[in-house]
Length: 125
Image 1 (cartoon, helix red, strand yellow):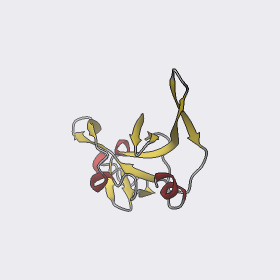
Image 2 (cartoon, one colour):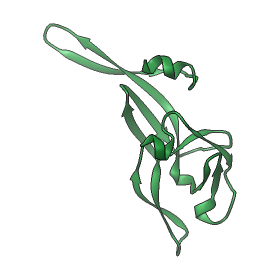
Image 3 (cartoon, helix red, strand yellow):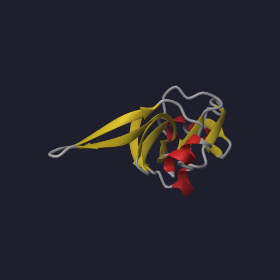
């Protein structure tokens, strides 16, 4: 699943597809496990940083197949959850507003690559 979030004038595209060991992810999806089918049921998406780590404290995936129990499927540096709970940033875009005498045009331009610790701080300031 792909989702978009606008945060501090930047548009983030996040996905929980193609996760791999070592990825920086955020625990955004909240829900419960259906015990009959062992499936994750999404309740809400929560971007609050004290809950998800978004944007300053990503979780790092240690093991994608930690347990056959869905609740402990993925192990990260901050705990365990189903694979569907974690999202990684796949694209960051910055909005550029172009004004003319009569019109205002908004466009989003992708930031090609970023080092989360260095460039992101410069972008946000």
